[in-house]
Length: 363
Image 1 (tube, one colour):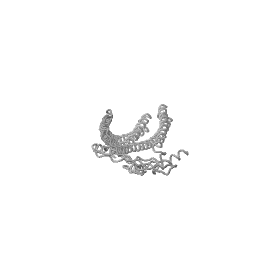
Image 2 (cartoon, one colour):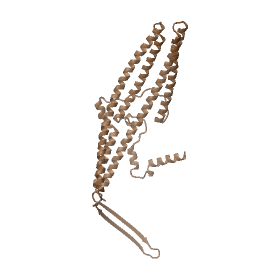
Image 3 (cartoon, one colour):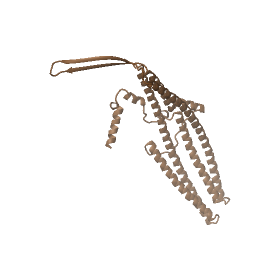
Image 4 (tube, one colour):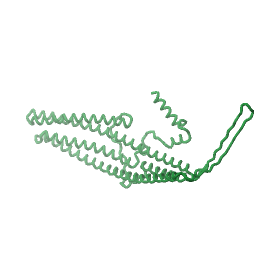
């Protein structure tokens, strides 16, 4: 009937623990979605690399044919032909490596997403970023599930500490017993009924209750310290992700400029080679520089896409709800309402789980 409020506080602490676990689940959702973004971007990047390597091999084969033709008329030496042959062989090996990397990326995608990738042809639209670093950090401190989970953990620890203090107080218990007896060799029946009300108070426990109270206070201090640590970590991660996104965007601009310059240089060197003012080695070096610039641009584009979604994750916004994804969403509130007043095997969720387990045992 009365335990100085300890049971009520324990119940509230358990509810806070449930809320903290829900936020932990949201953080896991973020990690799963970011892994899916990484897998998608990796498949797209490796596809582009394969296409780039194929085009590079085609250009080098044309250079090899041109070198052979020029060798036939005495314009170049056997060394020039050998250089072109070496570059073609290297391009074939690089193409094989790129195709292997693409197969590995597709396998990783299937592992993360659950099915093989379909037609992957374009980068996902980049989400809008916060207007400033301060805005990004403020948003992270308001929205990140890690921080919300730790806030609930602190509240649960406060309630447990208060409960430990209430355990030192008195408790009042009400008990009732009823019995009915029949004697077969007589016609006598008996009915007994008793009610008792007990008031108890612990007078001495060898310091156990006080030690339990101090232990809960120490846990509360630890949770509060962890909350400060989580706040600083989230602020730092948001700043790092925000800066990383700006850096990736600037790197992509530079990579585009490099590709344009390398393309102009390659076309000029190749034209000069046809006029005899450039050697085969000059053409091959220009082609390699163009390939390196195009590869760097692919890497910069992938880095920018990942940085954008990494910033969302750092702010606690990389969720199916925030991204408005057309997927079935798990609602912990609905599940809680289904199981709060009934044993698990009676609820719909429990029955669904039983059917799944039976199907697994049959298989």
